[in-house]
Length: 340
Image (cartoon, rainbow, N blue to C red; front, side):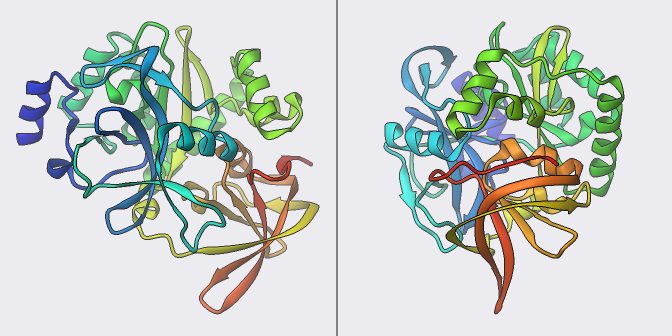
């Protein structure tokens, strides 16, 4: 109740409040740092420290929020190179942890002057009304289209931060930590694949994703699966997956990456829940692991099957074990996953 009262007094969405009142942050949540920079929560690292991507800074741009005014987007894609570039522009706090071979941008919820916009599926009746208020007609269309999967999704991006406009995309995250939601997602995937609709993604978006990663444009088109890029009544809707429970746990997996490039074909069982964590991890039928830092490649691996994987040879450390792994999504070399 107190959180709602604070939000109303500031003219913000009901799910936004000073962080001291909000507590836990979930994947896809929005954090305003000193009301000048907008971050997107990825996962908890430890304590109240979260891996978070800087997305907007205060400046000339088409996005506007009550608390920050006009916003300028500083990230093009969610590739590692783009994230590091955005972190430099935002003056983000960086921290090197044993789990990553590079510095990552972080947000500490104990810092002052933070505003957290947070929700977790299923949305409450009040949150459903708020989503419809911010995106009149759009949210109800999306909700009806998703059918039973709708209870497993949360909004993120412009809808969550209250800057939704007539040209905004709808960005959604499916929480696959609940077995029922994982099952409903699989049903939705099968339905969308049956419809066999190509992702309605503009060429400029595909070219941007490809150039950021130095991979072919046609590969990006294959990676954009029909269940992740939707068109609902002419509105672009993006769907991604996250295991909320896993991402709230402190990250204990350590990946030691070499400079050796591995290029091989592997078989992957579909619908592995560990792909909802960050980094996303899948085990192959030969007992090795794929570790993915770039979300562009996750949907294809989640579908499973025979895949061609090009990445860096690595050691996935679990306790005293050193397991064979291939790392995808690093800045230094062109790594990728494709249909074999």
